[in-house]
Length: 109
Image (cartoon, rainbow, N blue to C red; front, side):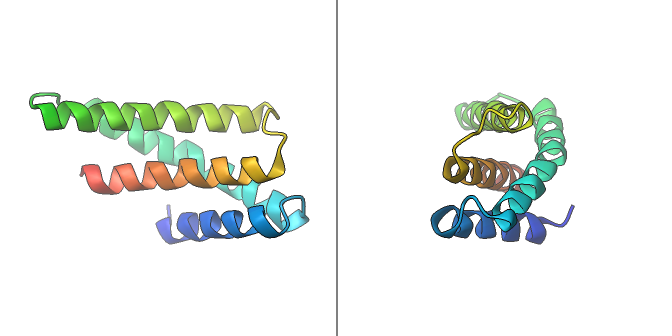
């Protein structure tokens, strides 16, 4: 997965959320971000399964990643089920879930 594309899409989504959240480009970028979530979630879940909780810092890092995975899954499922009906919130939630997963994966290696 090209992380630059994910971050670029997240940036476009956040811009469109404030300028034109109901437009065709906004719907397209939301679909693009939602498509990035499954591979990001798979990578995060793999990383989570390999993390140890030996020290307080390691336990906290594992806890943060687990919470991030839960949040991103809930955003992805809500999008899949059509529950994200506020266009502005939809864009922010999808962009945020992708960014959080990317950030946690990048910093936890």
